[in-house]
Image (cartoon, rainbow, N blue to C red; front, side, top):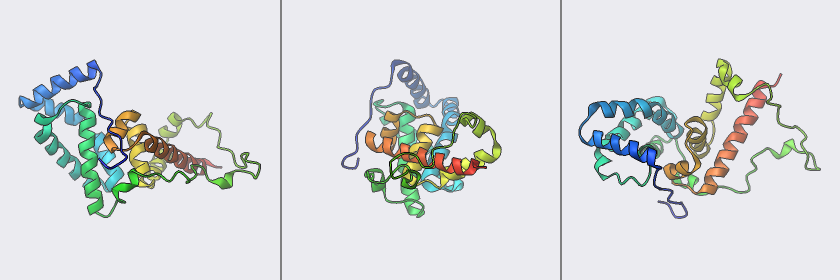
Length: 218
């Protein structure tokens, strides 16, 4: 782990841990159906997270295939200090980072470990000299996330806007807001501090909101 990162590995709850134990036992026993089940459950999510690092879907699919091979090879050494899902995602992100660097689609790993605290999350030009909003955020009472996502055109725009985020912000946002991973597990998977995770997520959400406001403007 890079200096300054926090090891977030923690014991899963009893329900999750019990399910993991049963699944791991089946996998170690050579139960092919167990492997099919976990692939069906996680494959799409792994591809989406991999694309946060490599950008190209074909490359992301290759990274995921490498991840599944590594999961089968490393399963006997899995210690259960995190959930099985978190462990798999961490294997995926490590391989995606390496592949992304090799494909020249990523910035150095250090970008995850240092956040510019002076970078504004909202464009300062949107404020008046008094500090009040000059151009307040667009009202979302009618344009709820559910309604926006239901519109094919807006969904395509949103996917493109996510793809254009800085890699570190994109990875955090995909894990948290697309895959529903909680903050602790996101820190564990990406090997970053809680503060970095929070700042990166806030900035990613702010950029997407600003892009959507512009897209939805009359």
